[in-house]
Image (tube, rainbow, N blue to C red; front, side, top):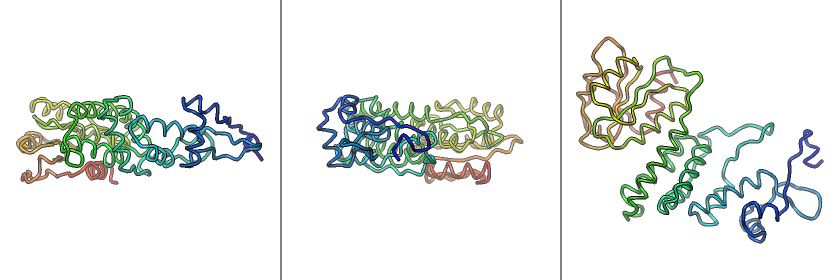
Length: 306
């Protein structure tokens, strides 16, 4: 039985020439990709010529995007073959975020696109990585390695300060877009997330907010650090279940902020997060958090018990 007869559903297929025109490449290139990398038609149709289905075309488009992002042909083909495509309506289960692990080649392609100052390619790669694997996996395997590379140099070489700024702006935009507003949250009182005065490393704050939103946990985020009196007023007004203070660099940690926030009768859990707190004695009842994964998991457990 052919595709038109399965479950009463017809899926359009396209010949090589049409797919080549759609992608803007030569038909011979498509045949080469099929022969060398296995990126050809996957369905079996009658007749002499094989035809490309919707999923086949989607994979070819992913490969083309990866090539534009700076990947080699082999890397782009592997990325397209390993990518998890959206499941068509009525065709089975979806892959949940977090079930896909992104490899180092995605980070290399992302950095190459940033060094080329190709903002659209950076945005596309970030969006695809988050859509395929979720914010947490994208942060650990793609975003954080590239950010570290711009800070300390990739393979020991410092380069691309302007590209580093472009990359940071693209990451910020991608994380904001990846932060849903849950229709129904699992916690009654929010988590207030902010940095300390002088904290220039605010991308982790947006990443944590996005991770918690994926878990349907409501937050209040101050991406720009407010003055201490404003922060204290925000705690009084929002009555948060938890406050996370981030210090990304040494010398920024200030335990006096916790003392001020702990005044009053409201029961609020206090957390110190970031490298800036390393080696700093914390006040009683202030719990340290390490990386993004442990922060998201600990907050979820404290607020909703899992």
